[in-house]
Length: 93
Image 1: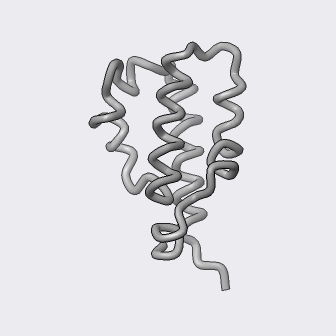
Image 2: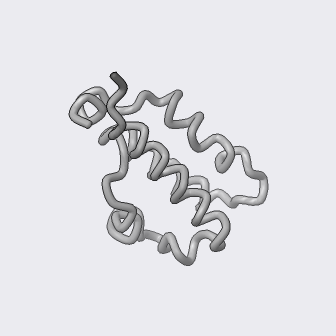
């Protein structure tokens, strides 16, 4: 955990993790910008500790996470975020 907090997650890895969403032609520019905010946060912090952060600034403007995405996309995003967190927290021996 400390290693990921210090080393962060590199840009290419973060973009790769969210590539399905970024390349989804059904998402609009605001949705993609929201995903880029998530990527930026993960790059700077290693992972998202608690997904409740997505309901707070800077993620809540101009639209909330709940209003921005349909339930299926929200769930897929949350799974991706949790996967990154789990990967950061698992200690490889």
